[in-house]
Every structure is written in C-alpha cells, then in structure tokens.
Image (cartoon, rainbow, N blue to C red; front, side, top):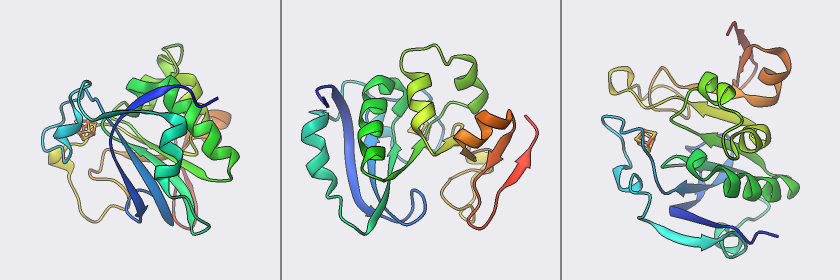
Length: 177
Ligand code: SF4
C-alpha cells in the first residue's frame, strides 16, 4: 500500500488559500496546459521536481488535528491520476476532505473518464476546481481560484444530479450543464 511514486514540485503545509480551513497542499509536477500568466511555470516540466514514494510523502504533510483537508494542485494532478487517486483514498480514510485543482474542464474529464486514473481521481475529490487559468479573466476577488472561468465543483453532487453544483461558503447553487 502507498507504494506508488509521484513527482511533486513541493508542499505547502497550513495553507489557507487552496480551499476552506487549514489545509496541506501538494503541488504536482508536470503540466501541459501552458496557461499564459501561470504562477507556477516551474511545475510544467514532467521530469522536474522531486520523485517521492507515497508512503514517504505522508509524514511530510505534517497532518495535525487543525488540518481539515488536503489540496492537490499543480502542475496538473490528472497527469499522475493513478498515484494521486491512491494518495487521495488514503487521506480521505483519515477523515480529510480533498480538493483537486486541474487545468482540464469538468466536461473533458467526464468525456475522458476512461483515461488512466481519471475516473478514480475524480470520484474521490470532494471539490474540483476546473479549467485553465485565463489571464483575461483574472480576479483577486474570487475565493480559491485565479480566474472567473474556473469553477468550484462539488463532485459527488454534480455526478449524481447531472448538473454542475458549485461549492459555496454558505450554500450551493445549480448551473445547468
Ligand atoms: S493548469 Fe495550472 S500549472 Fe498548468 S499552466 Fe495552467 S495555471 Fe499553470
């Protein structure tokens, strides 16, 4: 268990900007989206960063009772979806919620759910922050995302209903797909 290797760009322990509450954020290495204005271009090279076995990564997350969730950010977590899903499963079993950032759109991930590990990673995420960063839609006012095209999607509710249910701090609203 937790034998898989992943390649990461880094970890932010006790983050408050990658989802609600106090979180540990893992920045995955490797991204092909090439968003103009990307804040983490050093994460693009799939051969960059550091390889780490999942079981060796867990202690580095410095999980403590104040940490309520873990965020997978990037880079592009779906490029390492099988290992990311294995790690996400373990973390969810510890009672943590899981947010996953991706440059792919929700609709693309659903259409390509048979791609290696996509379905598994999608199905264990509580919230998916989808879509590429678009500098023309950049806003500093948006919680937990950089541009207005990105959505905070409640995954299980959206799959169940066939409609995109967006996460809100106090409530949810429905947008027809
Ligand atoms: S998806 Fe994220 S990491 Fe990849 S280029 Fe876009 S902003 Fe950068």
